[in-house]
Image 1 (cartoon, one colour):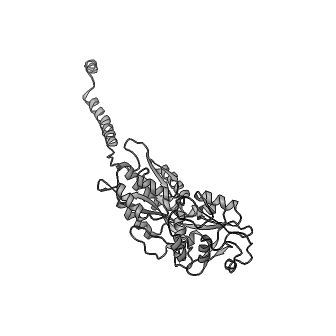
Image 2: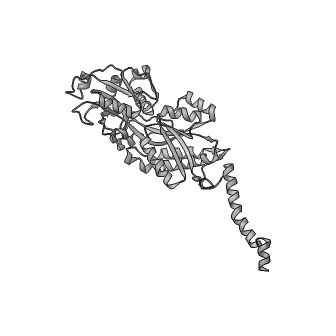
Image 3: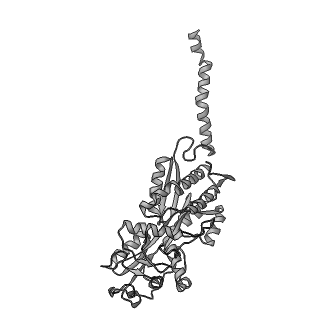
Amino acid sequence: MKGQRGKSGPTQSQSLMRVLIIGPLVVSLLLAACQGGGGQPTSTSSGGTIRLNGAGATFPFPLYSRWFDEYAKITDVQVNYQSIGSGGGIRQITEGTVDFGASDGIMTEEQIKAAEKARGSILHIPSIMGAVAVSYNLPGIPSGQLKLTPDILADIYLKKITSWNDPRIAQTNPGLPNIKVAVVHRSDGSGTTYIFTNYLSKVSPEWKEKVGNATAVSWPGDIGGQGNEGVAGLLRQTPGAIGYVELAYAKQNKMPWAALRNAAGNFIEPSLTATSLAAQGVPLPDDMKIMITNPTNPQAYPIVGFTWILAYQKQTHQTKGKALVDMLWWAIHDGQKYAPPLDYAPLPEDAVRKGEAQIRSITYNGQPLWQR
């Protein structure tokens, strides 16, 4: 009987075992092919890697690089982020060439309408806070020793003050050399520029009227550099130069910065504490489209802003959409601990709550993707 059974094929128990092994494999492959997996959001049903593509702001790039490296260690999600400037990030998310964009500036009404026409409502999800440092090349003047008032900074960029020994500058900085002021700005579409020009627009009516606030503006004069690197290079090469870069970049590259007089009349250097204080007591809107430059807190640094990840509320790819919302949730919670070592300020609690609500609103086929 044993030999006969062996010739005629597998036993009933062997056949059942094959069904038990093969059946789930076939089902999982079918689910993966249909992108309908309802399993873990950070891995594909076949155990592969999910890849998300993002592009935009240079301002938070050091932190984003750390985030995405750490996130890849604990999930099957790899994030490729291109630091091309906020303007580029807005353009690419609108064109649908990336899964998310990133910007330090609020999208304009025109940009929002273009995005809505392409794929619907777009969210501004806060990620962290950062400061813009005003750096300079004045030999013998150490970091923090140059003191600038709002009107003087605006008039330097308006090209109304052209020498470092100008009497107005000398009131708070006696003894500066007779060197021409070389004004350096970003030449690309930049969220850092958005924060900087937002500040100048608040403290100088003339700046607001003549130049305004945007990721790219028509500068009154002098020289532009591509990215933080370009501005830093021009500052190093040009005696008497003044420019603006994000604080993390300035600290990492040992660039000197000015102390700025804030709205309360105090000269404050950029720091994590002074950055965090800028949002203290500020009512935050649900959509988080708010600029917090020139805050009223007496110890706050005046050129501070949120930086946002831009994501469509209605996702078109379930697996990627699920991976995106999980990554965003991790970023505004566990990811915040990586901010201070890289000179960024973690989100205040009310900003985290606003971010949570936005992430919960992201859907695929009308169903929320955040499930926990």
